[in-house]
Each structure stands twice: as structure tokens, then as C-alpha cells.
Image 1 (cartoon, each protein chain N blue to C red):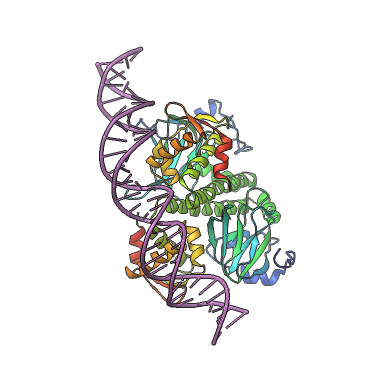
Image 2: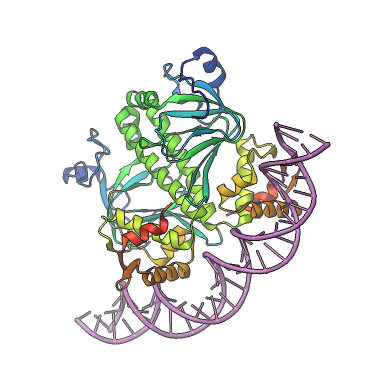
Length: 230
Length: 230
DNA sequence: CGAAGAATTGAGTCACATCAAAGTTTGTGG
DNA sequence: CCACAAACTTTGATGTGACTCAATTCTTCG
């Protein structure tokens, strides 16, 4: 779409030879499975990684950049189920097909794994399978937390909680640039862009954050935390 | 907590014979693991199965009745994350503690399994671990579907979708008694009881369902389906 | 049978959506 | 590297779907 797509599965051999070992990026996910090597790949801003309904042939780990997964209704209403930041894995499915669409928010580097290989490794090694179980359980926890947010939280609480979550996943410094547009935030939080914008303005008025140009924000975590307290 | 808890003790033969056949969801779960036997147990209407924050020592399979899992905010707002009907497993957690509260909707029979035993079995058998992975992935899919419902659907769509889901999970006859109160439905769909009630009335007016006394409903599935179509 | 809880219905309100118009940032092509 | 159009964001005015408050009515169950 946006870039020429060199058909996935760029020569594993070369990738292998190139010296990709267990990702320097954090995870012992496939530890003990030297045959599961990810192939590096890049996506341009707004480029689709996979589409809803497509065969789920690969799974992905974000190395750099960010990816969103979403569902769309025929009338255009969209729900972003999750943002995937460096270190995160995404693309797992239960059935044959992807149930979401995945797109890069920005220039993004990933490692691509053949799903079949991962599943084979899981079938052979209880350790790998347990690791995958744990990953799925963690995603489930996030989805359930989102459920509480969407079902029972006000706009102010949603935005405050969202800012704190992104901060945490981005390193927890309290100062960062939001990697997504207002539309993406709105479609994740079940709001409109106008409400997100107004809410950010109000949070700034209330002294819960300061905004630099564009998507830059500095959080006053104490105040934000009080807004989402149970 | 609520009743004297006869520590899980095999009652093996009968539990095994009674419990382990076929519900589409995860019946073969512990196949090949004859040492993982559930202990039958019962809960009364509104009785707590476990509370948020408690140590997650057991997992459960519903045999009869229904269970809800939920989270509550300090001001009373509640989100029901899921209803668990016969055949369903619930109670899995990533960490040490339960992140939800679970309560029986009605007189409910379950099989109780020691979590440690299940995890040991998973660590030993890749087959069991893969089965658990699959179960978690399925729960994740349900949670993500709920996310779209809560984030982007109208009250009418939420209630219509909910009715069809319950129908399906209860056997798909189109005629059944809702096993939960309006409050439970409202707290699952992110609505108020009044809105749920009004919406049901409207669905009846529109000829999308008929109501018998109390919680009895008969669905006109075609019409309902059109209301939640993508 | 009677009381308590659950469900329905109605009237009025409010939080967030929608419509509209600037203002700001971005990134592309010259 | 700059200019400028397109995209994104903010802000304002108005609308509305769902909530709140309130009053019956219907079930359930002791």
C-alpha cells in the first residue's frame, strides 16, 4: 500500500546468518528454541501489517515504533483494541484468520515469526507453551481492564488512565510524546476526538499535565492518579 | 469464607463420570491427566466464590448454574467482565491474587481444581499447556469483542448482541430464561437497569423478541441479528 | 398472603456527541 | 531548507442518548 511489500519470509537463512539471536529486546520468550528466529521487517507510517479476515500466518514483535490493532463496523465506528509498543508481541489468533486489522502508527520495525513454527515449538516444549499461555493471560488482563474503563469510567478518568498507562509502557518518565493521534486515542477510549481534546485541555487547566507543542506531554502523576483511584 | 470449605478431595469416580463430557469448551482439557480431578462443590444464589485480592488457589468449571466475575470501584460502579455458564472454566490468574470477584448467580455446581496442580500439569505436558493457552486466547477474544461493544455500540445494539450471545451459549433454541438480573445485565453492558429495561421493551415493540413472565424471552433472531450487523 | 426485591415506565437533566470554524503542526515538493 | 497545503488539533455552539430521580407494577419467596 504505502511501500513495496517484499513478500514476507525474507530469506530466513540470511536473517539467521545476519546474526539475529534471541532478541536483545527483553524477552526470553523463545529461549531454548534456537530455531525460532524472527525476521526483521519494517512498516511505514499508517501501513497495514495485516487485515481482518486475512490468514494469520505470522506473529510479530515490535522492536521500534508502535502498532495499533482494531476492528471497524461497516458504518465506520472503530474500536482500537490495543497499542503495541516496543517489546510487545501481537498477531496471535485462535482460529485461522486475523480478527483485527493491525497498522503501524509510525515508522516501525518488527520481528516476524511464522505462526506454525511458534505453535510447533509450543507443542514440543511445555516451557514455551506456558510462556505463551502467560502472554495470553496478560493480554486478557489488559482487555479486562479496558472493559472496566469503557463500561464504567467518565471521559476524564479514561483519558487520565490512558496517559498513565502510556507513560508507564514508555518508560515511566512522566514526559513523552504520545505516539498516536487524537483519533486513535478516541477510538481506543470510546470517545470522540473533540472530547479527548477538551479533556486534555481540562487536565492542563487542572494542573494534572502540561503540554508541549504537538503530542508532547508532561504528567503530574500524583494528580492524575487521584482521578482514576478506585 | 461463606461456607465450610471441604478441602478439595478427590471424590474421583463420581465427579469424573459426571463432569467430564463434551461441552464444546474445554472438556478434553485435562485429558491424559488422570491426576487432575475436580472436586464437586456447590454455591448458593449470590454466594461469593472468591473475592478480588484473595489468593488464587483454585480454578473452577461450571457444571450447573451460572457465575459472574466483576470488578467494583470504590463508589460502587461495577463492571461484570464475564458470565460463566455450564462448561466454562474460570478463576485463572496471572499473578498470585484474583483480580476479580466471582459470585454465583443462582444455585450453582462447580468442579474445583487446585491451581498448582493445573500449573504443574501444564509445566509437564505441552499438550495441557497448549490447551490452557487456547482457553486463555478464547477468553481474550470474548473480552475484545466486549471492548468493541462497550466502546462503540448503542444501547440497542448492546442488548441485542447480549441476548444473542446468551441464547447461543445456552443452547441456541431462541427461547430461554435470562439467568441474571437487569442489574447484572446493565453492569455487563455499561448501562443502567432503566436503560436495559427500556431497551427490552423497545425490542419487544419492534417485534425482535417476546417476553414471558419474569426473565423469560423468545428471540426473533433474524431481526436481532440485523441490529448488530457490522 | 404479604413484604421485599425486581422490573417497568415517566419526566427532567447531563455528559458526551455532533456540527462548525479557527488555529496549529506536519511533511512534501520545489 | 523553506513554503505551503493537507492533516491534525483546539475551541465554541447546539443536540441527544443515556442517566438520574421518582413512582408504580410485577415477581418471588418466606
